[in-house]
Length: 248
Image: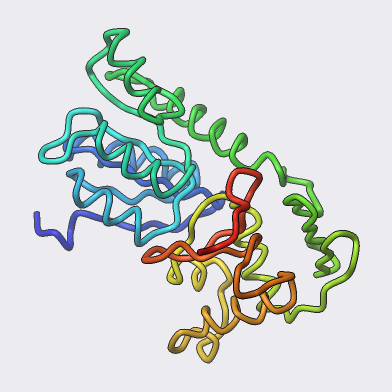
């Protein structure tokens, strides 16, 4: 299988996108097929290096990660993912010893399921991780709150420390994508996909321009932002309580 065939994308009915890093092609194919029948989009990668690259380029809600991978092992892949994002990581492995489970969790995994596993249990665990990750919103939520920043989704309204901030609809979409994932770095490509702007807005480095304008509106010192931060070489993030220091 060529490197171009290592990833496959599917439609997402539930709004959940999963990256499965698994070298057992048959298991990955069958698992992806089952999850897809339940409205979950799946991208598959067959080794650690491809998995990390796919993760960096995409926007995922959960990572299913095999421990025993060719090349870069699952533990190291988990460390790389955790250094970039707080996306839930669910480890899949045939190694069921307690020491391996503990090491996986200490490395940064959020859950652990041994092979062979029940597809229904895996689906339930994925949904549980997504619910936890989206706990600020929930299915009926009407606002996103990060510290003193509040986005009212129905009114398309932004307030900071109780004062309304005038933003364009596209600026609101970008800010919502970041605020819903506070503390998580999003690349320009992820932001373009999540904000779903028109073709004109997607040209060149328009994301940088919109971020600049948002900083002018949200930051007391836009040159040293505390809320809307740049992570060099990666992208942008809305700072949560653990990431509030100003950019260098």
